[in-house]
Length: 442
Image (cartoon, rainbow, N blue to C red; front, top):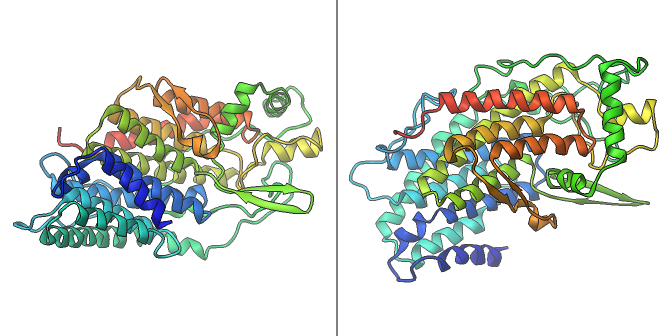
């Protein structure tokens, strides 16, 4: 692991100056921040966190990194203190102390990423590599010491804030009650896992007034007997689509699958395969966009923070709706009432169908990214290449969110109507984040 981390950091160094005292240039390289986010992505994936919990990892880590930059460059960035719920203040750097704020931002990101990720020490090797990078490139001992101390000071403030978001209290909350009644969600094959995070609407939002600030219209009423009903039409629409997927539609579904732990079953053999979760995928897109736009370090840190906050709140809004109606998955309905042998292309995740989490957070993230890099920002998403899935290109972030809508439908996970509603309400969350957060001074 450590060797791989050194190679990853070394790849950043290769595009920079090689003189002994070039630490400022090294740490101003935004690619190093993206590399660090990718490392957290890998740690989250390795520890089997659900997408919902993963959004919390990314949000607090990104806010910690951003607050270091806001403290170091107050003429360019505003602190989120007083802008996000429950964060009243963040320590400012001590006057007269020379600090490398980019290095400190990386350390703060890693510290919070590790603090809300189990097990402890998951990012130690990577942090050690960053510190070695500073030493190898001539960072003076006082600058190193001051930077580490400031990163620790900001991290402590963000960690204290994170502990008051009700996460720990929800760990001991009652589990979802499974009832095999028509239209109600029940666990799905092959793992038949229990419902994930049924109390996530009790988590403190960052920007939303409350979890139920944006309540979607109710889902179509469950009805598989009336062939003219909206519900029955939705059931047959997704079944027929799944029965006749084109190669392009299968690629779209697979590209946006983002299942952090797929259980593969072959006879008596069972094994899991891992990929980045939906929020991890969009964190990767932030880095791709930043590199294409040639964004500077501060702009990229700001983009990660705004996007992760939008996704964090999007999950809270969506999970509030999911466990309000507890709607059954297409797979369950089709198997019980229409075709016992039907299977969706993708593995159904363990929570109710309406609304769609991936569609909600994708449209929310798209709005955050559009506010930073602009609309009609064309890019090629290479996130899935490391998992053997070829790239896809998009005309804009909103275009990508729209395609994700179809991906969840093609994958057999969500009714088309659910995806449409989810996209619209995720955009409401994203718009609110963009409107309320004043991050750049200009």
